[in-house]
Length: 150
Image (cartoon, rainbow, N blue to C red; front, side):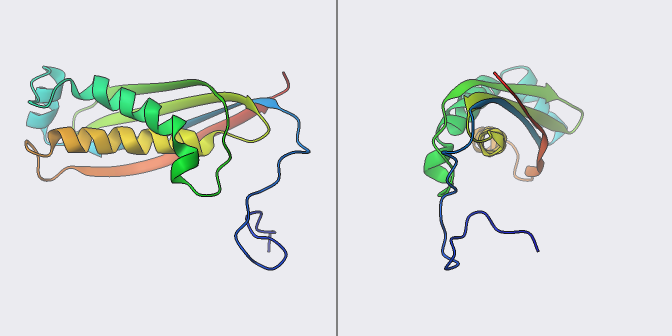
């Protein structure tokens, strides 16, 4: 069984010590989607949701969420984010969300990418809930993570 890195020798929750690791350029890409009724997608496409520009607000929410990950996930490290990019693709029955996060640090940025996708999807849900009672968020997952020397 692999060693669990967030437990100390006594089995207690513990933040991983990354002080001996060298800073590297790290990038993570995550995705997810929110399933919506075609009529709701059309309202988003035409910017006719009463709460405002759904995708612009969801983009800002996703970026803000990535920056707040350390406050939401108890054992995440505080890392300097160099870039957070949120992309949306309106499909037939869903808005597909992709988040890319980049840092130069001693630990990765996958939690920030996953948090960004999740909160962007939740924001779309919040903004469209009056128009669509059957929305569903699904498929939130990490697509890739890379690191390279700087």
